[in-house]
Length: 188
Image 1 (spheres, one colour):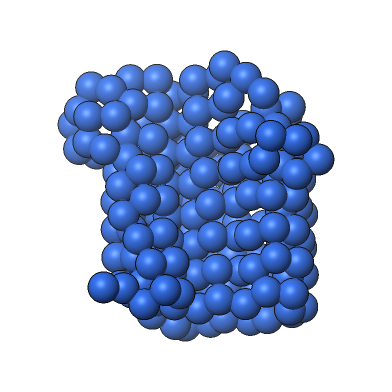
Image 2 (cartoon, rainbow, N blue to C red):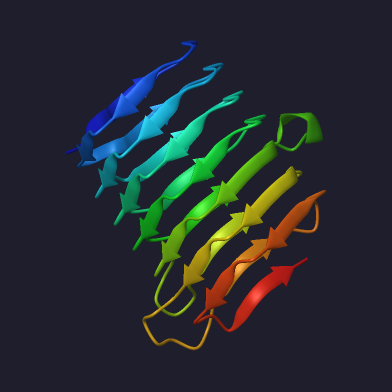
């Protein structure tokens, strides 16, 4: 079996997690509800069921220079009213379902807003026949995806680099390198 959580905290301000190896857990890294200004830097979050999970109301956080790879579902999940976060210069590789998912709830006020995903390497995520680099779901708004390298090198013929659902309000894509997918961007 797996340990339930590698590193988890909630309702804590200014928590810093640096230079840790989080491996073989159900939930690798869990920045829990209401945590403000958390910093996760230079961690290796690998071979967990779920990689890194930003829970409810994570605000003004920084995820930088982390390796979120080979997790059984996603590398990074950003969700319920997680806002004003910067996710930069991370490596997300070989996660089974998706590299990065912006998830939400069924009510717009509970979805991610004003988050920056920049300078990350997002490679070979999702199934080999249907790779998926980034999935922006529900009512996410003001999501900026800039300067990332989003690739699939496994040689398949399917998949999507960035998938944006029809209910999403605002996504800015700029200066990304997206290669190896049937569709670079699927904007529904």
